[in-house]
Amino acid sequence: MKKFRLGLVGAGRMGLVHLRAAADSALVEIAAVADPSVAAREMLRPFGVAVHADAMAMIGAGGLDGVLIATPSPTHVATIAAVAARGLPILCEKPCGISAVQAKEAAAIAESAGVHLQIGYWRRFVPELKALRERIMAHSLGELYLVSCFQWDETPPPASFRASGGGAFIDMGVHEFDQLRWLTGQELEDYRVAAASTAFAEVVPEDPDAVQLLCTLSKGGNGLVSLGRRFPIGDACWVQAFGTMDFAESRFFWPPAGEAVFFAALRAQLEDFARAVQGQPSAAATAADAVAALVAAEAATAALRQAR
Ligand SMILES: NC(=O)c1ccc[n+]([C@@H]2O[C@H](COP(=O)([O-])OP(=O)(O)OC[C@H]3O[C@@H](n4cnc5c(N)ncnc54)[C@H](O)[C@@H]3O)[C@@H](O)[C@H]2O)c1
View 1 (tube, rainbow, N blue to C red):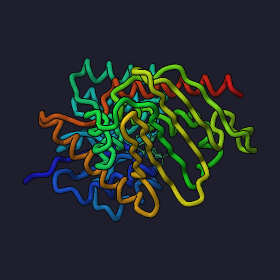
View 2: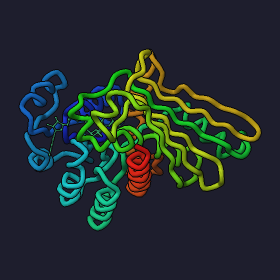
View 3: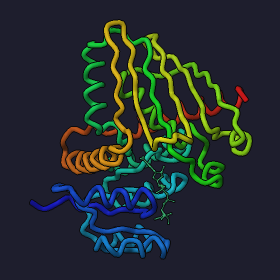
View 4: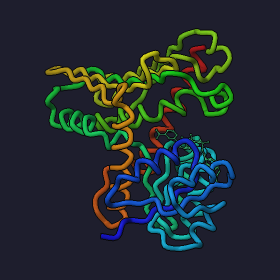
């Protein structure tokens, strides 16, 4: 069977991860890549893909069924506009711009061009989390008191990235906000934030080493988002759900197995995109979900500023 041919725009850290994740897919292949950086293009040699200096040259070469955007977040909207003008369906990395206004703009561009747009919130493709969501939706935990979502990284990114990445809630928190909404089927409001006051917290005010957010879920329970930049045992994400009838915990991304889970979810996400373009139902985040995650991240960032 002919594979779905993806063009990848942006071959940095995340683009290379997508290339490795796609390599094991029977359904999807990354057939071409565009990146203006000579150094990034050099890194692509082992993958044996067609390489271009810009997305328009890549699309112009023809033969693509869809485009995966993994450029820096501030370039998402312009890249979506350029690809949508050529009529190709788009899978864009999270967060889809760096503000809710930008994500709304991206949604409007895709809608008026009539192209499919989905956003790369990979947690939606993790089997353990899908099973937890099914339990929550089937009421097997009862009413939810609290759903806690933890994302703790082994080490922080460079200070320059932390200063320009929009802060902890935009860079990291969007995953947890999307996950909370998706797991519970509820909306988030009323954000309260406390940050640990470490030396780094003073250097990068919107990106403290450790920050905790409490919010209210629309059916009355609470959500907790816990973000940390230093976790000695390795990069980790986990969830705890406290209900009136049961408790569930999933250490779905936990060393040393985290990378395998991540890659499998990214591959499933690419395959979902291919199927969605062919008219099948998609489990992915929509542009509206991206807007909601950024609305929450912006409110959380405002609450952090107030708390400091
Ligand atoms: N889903 C996740 O878990 C996850 C993890 C990390 C990053 N991301 C997202 O992936 C995106 C990229 O992040 P990254 O860490 O790979 O960044 P990066 O800086 O490592 O790589 C970005 C690449 O895009 C290239 N680029 C810049 N402008 C371009 C353009 N107009 N056309 C083509 N290429 C262009 C750069 O040369 C670079 O090689 C961001 O939106 C980020 O939020 C998602």
